[in-house]
Length: 161
Ligand code: MG
Image (cartoon, rainbow, N blue to C red):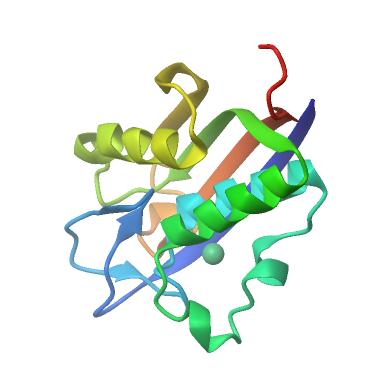
């Protein structure tokens, strides 16, 4: 078994979509970034890559590469899954924490969870998505952006569970 951790943060910008765990969330601003800036999926991919000893998303999907401009991070996550599988590793479980004062994410959590279960090929009880505010403190609390953290456990694919 191998554990990995990921962290990411993106700032809000005008004329951008706010996409978290593949869900477009209606909000006056979106997240800035080279891809779709899906902060939670970025943290999750770094957790998966970290557990596999494969570096980070910046190494695999450099933001200087035009082929990743505007790309859905869910597509990048599928690519990470293939990288893991090529090394005989599969996720066992994953836990993602989104830190956002706004927008309110409550109504979108279920779809986020479904999206990650599908992408990770895991049952519902082995994927967890949660959200917290910072009670107004820090950049998330001041509404400047959103951060996310993730941990993931990998096992050899096909191992008895
Ligand atoms: Mg990022």
